[in-house]
Image 1 (cartoon, rainbow, N blue to C red):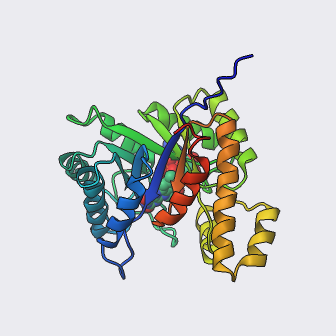
Image 2 (tube, rainbow, N blue to C red; image 1 turned 180 degrees about the vertical axis):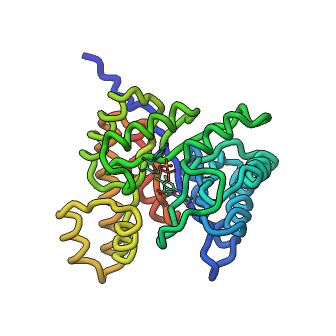
Image 3 (cartoon, helix red, strand yellow; image 1 turned 135 degrees about the horizontal axis):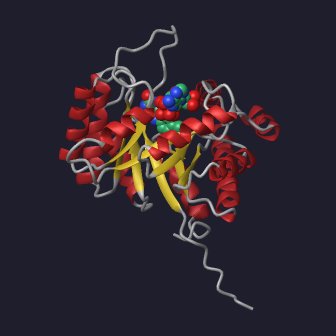
Length: 290
Ligand code: FAD
């Protein structure tokens, strides 16, 4: 009998966001120093779709991730309000900072139904644009995907057809929206693999450690919550220590099951909380073969 049961090395990456207006960008640096100890494959940095200041903060942080903390950085880049010139400038700024990986995104449409005055309608337009841009041939491009379908998609057929178009435009890897029910992710993987989408997929996992987070996330991301999860959260919502334990334990349980099913990678939505990332990392390090 072969007793060599070394688990395959599963990818691990973290998402962080620029601090809110009330906090300084410097506050993120302590978090980065702690996240670095967990040896992630990359750190991705979000980018608010509303305004150039958001881009500056993202640039500043990916620059620090790359050049100060010596980690691989992925810059999120929502294109819906950008002109081609603005996109080219933003990409050149990333390249100058030594950052050659982007998560190409559309960005959310304004709630009032207006159409932003940019040159791009879909993330796939940005992917094609980067692939045609001289000097960016080596860029690694990630894109988003949705195990519970993008809320704008009328049905699965359209969702997967558009995802295939996006990947075929030159995407190297996908990162999923957060989800709490692994079976939905497995069904999604069957759908995309049957459609001939064969790039690696990182599963987006969000440890929920307070009840405010759940309400916001479900509203924003439209992720469905299993009943068991809701019952437990409801019972302990006013006990921060218990919520921390429950949120980490739930994420660990999801990750172990995903790893056992051979997932390509785990993308942890850290909410800028390195303590949560460290707790989870400690519980799954061997399972992920890291
Ligand atoms: P697209 O791939 O363009 O898809 C959006 C919708 O359009 C889908 O319904 C798709 O089926 C449809 N579609 C695509 N192509 C076509 C076509 N040719 N014709 C008709 N319909 C089409 N937002 C931010 O602003 N900043 C961030 O930093 C950020 N980070 C994110 C990170 C991850 C991992 C994820 C999953 C999302 C992130 N978002 C971020 C949110 C994202 O911008 C929204 O979910 C947005 O609504 C869709 O972006 P997309 O890139 O998936 O869009």
